[in-house]
Image (cartoon, rainbow, N blue to C red):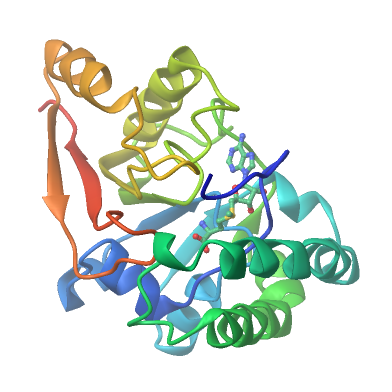
Length: 228
Ligand SMILES: C[S@@+](CC[C@H](N)C(=O)[O-])C[C@H]1O[C@@H](n2cnc3c(N)ncnc32)[C@H](O)[C@@H]1O
């Protein structure tokens, strides 16, 4: 078994990881981006420092920074121990080892926390959750969702996934989701029926390889362009 988590863990990734996971180009970075389920990622904070604008939406933002740090500290050792117990399930390239992964996750959390209060005041960290984001139609060029949909396929139904993707397409012209594996390192059983369902609604949906792989075999994202 790759990973046994009874709930979604508040682990965050950096801007550089977002760039790789979603093959973000310089042009993409200048688009209006919505980060769905960004949690304690450093993406928004680092984008802000570059002069770019991201809105992140996550139920986690109902908590203050100290609470989020406590939630992270409560799970980090267990997650890293599970990773250490299954060394062959992970690709040690971008992150060199479980210790290096932990170091990076802590660094990202600190980056996020240093920006969080200010970002909330600026409206860049918004409380909300799939499948109803509470955002007006067509506000964004691109919606990104990392390590929530597909990954937690055992926790959330097919209907939840379909409604969530339709919701992201309501507010953004394009949606990218990474990874497409479950916690058990299997392709999500929802992927192929979802692509068929989205295409039957006139959207263009396709899988694209990316140059980021931590879960072994997890180097693909789903890209969906809204029907014109
Ligand atoms: C594993 S973290 C990933 C954070 C970030 N996307 C990244 O990759 O660095 C998953 C995030 O999904 C958020 N989440 C949980 N339920 C959600 C929902 N219904 N809608 C949107 N996000 C949700 C959690 O609060 C958490 O921050």
